[in-house]
Length: 229
Length: 406
Image (cartoon, rainbow over all chains, first blue to last red; front, side, top):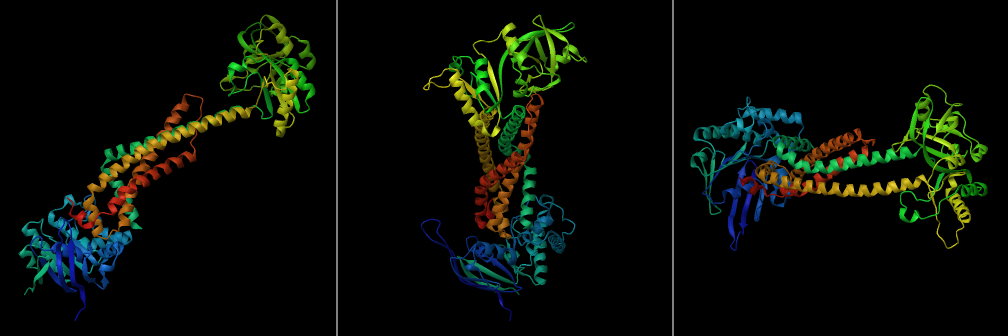
């Protein structure tokens, strides 16, 4: 049996925006193994964004334990969290979040700049990542010269570049038409076949269909945890 | 360290994309640096110019007069009794610390020979020691001797320009000229001395002091000036004390009376000059600092705008692994680059204005390494100081909120 890549134990996240406390996450425990393909589903306010932020080390839980690839995340400081985000996590966002002024290849290189990789190595790895997502002929294009699907492919290449433990996609098809959405989800399927661990946060059942395991959240708790057949 | 190069490239891109905005922002810095460079360059140039002009006058020379140079109160000093030739002789005969003493009277005259007439030429009446006290050795012929000086002979020494104008290629020594219609025998021609503070030093004639008194008008209330060459340049203060007591005796001053004469030195001019330039330097520093402050506020303002506009980018960079420190560095670098462009532009315009001014004045300008260092240093400093707050604001952004920012 493989060791758990992600081990979440009774995590809570509480906000106090006004007088009353809001429990965004109310005791979540979750194990994810290497190579899994998971969809996290739920209505808005169910806590799925909060859970994704905590898994992505953008935020830390109020209580509970989170281990990611043997790192004890809740004990890490800001700089160590930044390092984990850089090395262990590949983000894919709904709005692509590419640097508008930079070419596709430079966008893909960016995480490597923060892990201090030399220019020639960065270039080599960015080229191979872009080829992997089928954009070998669009490397010198800027985001405004690319279609939505192409932008998201660049973002996926950027997520892959540092060989992260997990690829974390937040509504990756939210800004795409249905045809392009399927293309992107097929790309995720391919990445999964290559052995990547993928977590997709979505509220669309069609998209969740692609995953092998679907976790439903409701009111900060896990409602259902289903293995797709 | 690759992110530093990355930050520089990003900054250059942003400046290129927002040319007008960047230019207006760095204008403040540019004006500040221009002021500093320009004024500094002119001041240094002017100082060099004056020191160079004064270098022809010796440091072991004392100039005694009714008036104090530079700092005197003309209204009270005007009432002093004139100095006399006898007082000059008294110093010469009784001081062991002086080498040469020359009493000097000034007048003017018209100089004429068969072919040429020069009007209002300045005239110096003095004694034989003037050759040494004012470094006026004749290029041809000779200076007059003490007997000639006392007797009041009709002999004259010409400044080099007078000689050139009146005799062209001929040797004037042994010829005659008429000074105000009176016939004078030329015994010598001075070396060319050039200009000092715009005065032509070669356009004058020298006659014995008793001759001047006999035939030409002079300012009796001003009296003579006395130029003295000290024996030992290292003992100037003792020489001054000695001369002071001798002059007090010969002018009949009682012990409780103040000196009614002034002993001047070149160093007085230099001291006065230093006082002026250092107060100008302070003024310059204040003006420069003020415009750099205003420029810095402009930089801070535009950097805050830039941070807000790029909130989402900052969130993305943080998600991709940029630490607070890297984000802060990126924005400080951007601010420093903007400021140093302003600084470099300021250096160029500052020197250009100084060069322009020196092209139609006699003042030289000087491109000094110091002012370049000051210009670059100050603008970089402004970039760091005023860029830090916006950069820190960017660094402290919460990545989740920043990613959600539209």
